Length: 94
Length: 494
Image (cartoon, rainbow over all chains, first blue to last red):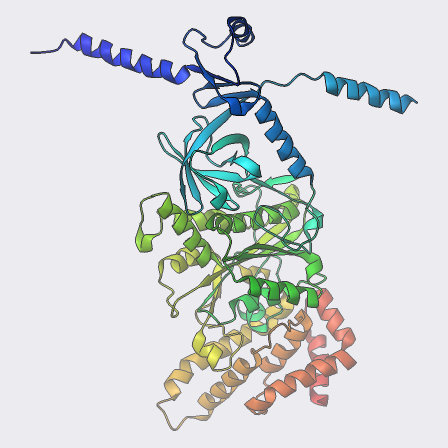
């Protein structure tokens, strides 16, 4: 049985697209479960991101705030992140 | 009142500042190896970029594969565990540079190792930098006096030259380099001694020696000892070069000693093998030539139009059993503008510095030699070459004619006169006076074992009676007939 080359091509592009989507998927980490109003605020603030496929995780260790991850890019808006930045600054001043 | 108002305003502004939203490149440590970590993520990181782990620990990206990033750790890698986060800083490795570096001992990141204050500077120089191009350069034509008779007369070094010091262990390679640094007193030459993979005790002794001779005021020591990570050892010479470039850009002449590049190549080999790069000859990676060529190419003499200044490089290579044809020695010999070859046999025979005059060359330094030295050195070279030819031949011949005997006698005296005690560099005029005496056959009647005494006596007399003569030669760097006659008079008085 022969497979239609067009089918092959389509399958390949579909899989590639899937991988790309997976790479560009937005991951949001927060200390508590986010309500829908909070999600809306996020969507407005970062309007250039694709929020339809967003993943939401809960991680108590970030204390407060959120961390947004898209692929290897990270936006750290958490309390734990700011605290570690502060401790680094203090270390450098010393 | 106005001041307080202004201060309050800025405070208010600061307090109102909303947190800035910045996206960062992040990755996760997947493997930790000896001084090297492999990370996942960091998709947008560039080669040579710095990455930060927790607690101010930095890494330096040197390997980018399809889906992984390899980085060397600058510091203690044992505190890093798999799963740790890392973020890219977006800039390449640079070191703080300023005039306050003089007299200091620093590590390859510019942090102090001498227990004094942190080097504060607004100027940072990149550790890796492409060397100055053809347009900016100028041929080597100013001498760098080493203060060592044998080198200044026979293998002269110019400012901006790269002269390799090569030899087995314990043949006095470091001594030559350090003596050269000691001789730069009052010469407006900034000296940088870069220790790579050396014993800390040896480096401490060198620092002490520099201090004792007052050479610390114009010297900087960059140290990555044998106990530091290979990453630090790998970076040390590039840091030394970057510091040198800072002073060069300010119009200074700089002398950099890399002690030694054999250990540097070892460090790079270890790193490359851990990163699983294909191994070539002697298990060195393919780019081990480029490793040293890009370092030594940074030595140069900048044209006056572009600010002048120069970097003279004295790389040191340690051979095994005098084997010059090993991989790293041949590489560095071909990169440099000549080499000073030290031999164990000569060293043990009491000829110190143990320079093999036949195998040592200086490819560009001849143009830089002072007129005074050129006048006496030409004859010397000829005498030595004839002596070498005859010395081997005459061992089989019992009866020699007068002419041959004369050559042999002259050669033995010249060899004797080229000996020099360590840490006792001589000024140009002192060297010229002794070599002049040798070339004018004043030593032929003196027995070999009394040559040393003659030299000391001559130098003492010169210091007492010929002070003006010394000053004149040192200043003008020319020796004419009148000077010769004056010197002759002094020698005859001895």
